[in-house]
Image 1: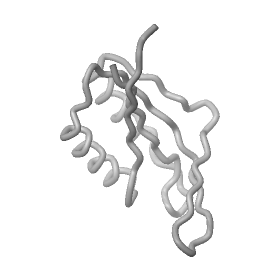
Image 2 (image 1 turned 90 degrees about the horizontal axis):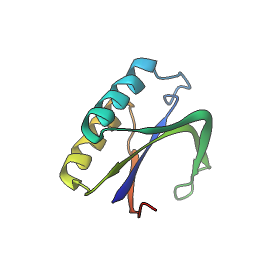
Image 3 (image 1 turned 90 degrees about the vertical axis):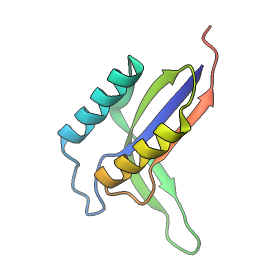
Length: 102
């Protein structure tokens, strides 16, 4: 079993919030494909990163996660690219980790 997490930004690079319909579409896609979804959206998480010589950058993010028996890497790579375009991101974090249900 795998836990797959998507870290989605709440605001574009100009500081404007993304429309709720964007998140609704992601929720529908993931629930349809994986049969369920957990969303961490009540208090936005903070993402911080630093690139060589640049000041620290930050994002307010929401975390979506699904569980899957296997990771379809080709599907996730394509879906990540779709989300990067929709959310106007150079790179969007989608990560997976092996897990065990207790």
